[in-house]
Image (cartoon, rainbow, N blue to C red; front, side, top):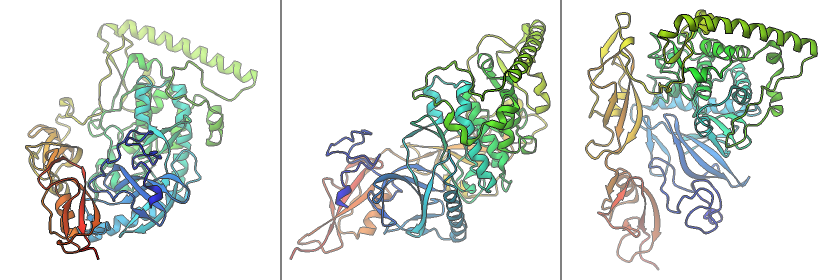
Amino acid sequence: MAAYENLCMNCMADRGGEELCPECGSPVGESQSPHGLAYRTMLGGRYLVGKVHKENGEGLQYIGYDTVAQTPVKIQEFFPQNLCRRGQQQELVTNPGCEVKFKENFRLFVDYSNTVSSLRDIPSMEKVYEVFEENQTAYSIAEWNEQITLRYFVERSGGTLHWNDARQLFVPVMSALSELHAHGVGHYGLSPDSIAILKDGTMRLIHFAISPVRQMRTSLQPELVSGCAALEQYVMNAPLTEATDVYGLAASLFFALTGDLPQDAIHRQKDGKLLIATAILRQIPPHVVTALANALQVPPERRIPTIAQLQEQLAPTPAVTSTISIEDTKMLKKIPMPYSDSSEEPLEPEADPQKKSLIWLWVTLACLGIAGVVALLLWLFLPSAQPEVSLPATSSQISSVVSWSMLEEPAIANHNTIREESELLDSDVETVDAPNLLGKSYTRIAARDDQDYDVMLGEKVFDEAVPEGDIVSQTPEPGEKMIKNGTVVVKVSQGSAMRILPDVQGLSLAAACEKITSEGFTVVKQDVHHQTVPAEQVIGYQSREAGDTLRYGTQVTVLLSRGPQE
């Protein structure tokens, strides 16, 4: 283990003896997540555990180090925190009464991870190498790449991507997703945060998880991205199908092209229109607008049913549909990082001169026709035109694309948050008063299944006035009108950011760890000889004293007596 003492636990780079990692800048004493395995825990006899980089209802995701291959890896630990807790030896202990639910989801995790691992030869998705059981739970080992999320990539690319560049990124991913569904595997969590851009400019699917994490009212805490989650993901026991991934992928493409996500599916039940700034709409080809409108239909039965059909509708001509495949992606232009604005035309296969002439003739006639209709409609409707373009709510309305108002570029509205719209709450929609969840325990509220609303965790915040685990704020606010069986998004208190180090002198290691972690600190132990403190009892802290005030999550070292030195 000493050979790996100099590894940075945040990025697994060699620190070279420096206090700050030369790769990522993290300090030597950076603390682990309160729920995570201790740094440098060895799993499967070869994988070294590093920092927790992601948590969700399924478990924890760590950066790790493969001591055999000598390379960083991604470690996913099945650890549903509403069903189990960490034991004294870092094993998982099921909460009383949760044994059946834990076992069901545990088996789902193992089977799903093994299936994803068996399909690791599919390009454009992260590769899962190994799945094994240990510590009364299971772990999957996947590749670790230097990458950024699609959300961050779009933000640093000026807020939007041109369709030419977005197409090159999305086509290989659509092919991979289509092949996954051909093997019965869905992602169901597609969003700008679960799609990554690698250093070579290619795009990849990441953050696979079992389906109970992708739906409300299951035994696990849900992880849904507002604007990307389809309507069926908010409905208990509704089937998740390939059309669910069509919605999430289309929402991610919509974000890449417009810089904004669609409004939440719950609120689009009454009015399914999508808003796009006029200046941005002019840059998107009409066939792409049509495909997005069809793929983002709120009712799943009216939505494009498969990824393959979405690809067909996004293709400008049948010739492109038949020639672009996942094997051709290496021929596509790589988008540089950081992104530079490109005016290049789509990279399409060469056609013979006769076909080119027919295509250009068709395009010219179509453009002249559209220009005439647009000019007529501008003359008719310019006085009452609206500042944003509203995409039709149904595929039957797509033929009226040219009737949208074309005015100056407006500010782009932000539809990423769940909020109540008064125009949605009319006599056709059954509504209820939003409950008052303020000050109540989030864990207890989320575990109930007898209420006519769902609860979604928005984020955890430090709040000295609200006890840890209780709800600080909610959207919609108490008493506001909301759709029956709709979702209330809450912020949950983590208590005070500053905590007092408890007195653990004379306790056993297990009792001391429980007392320290309950205050939000992480613990490591160091064995030392002591002349008066009996063996296996805690002497105190290293370099700290009981009563010290420290920040939440700080790692502390307890000194455990080994008895007198012989």
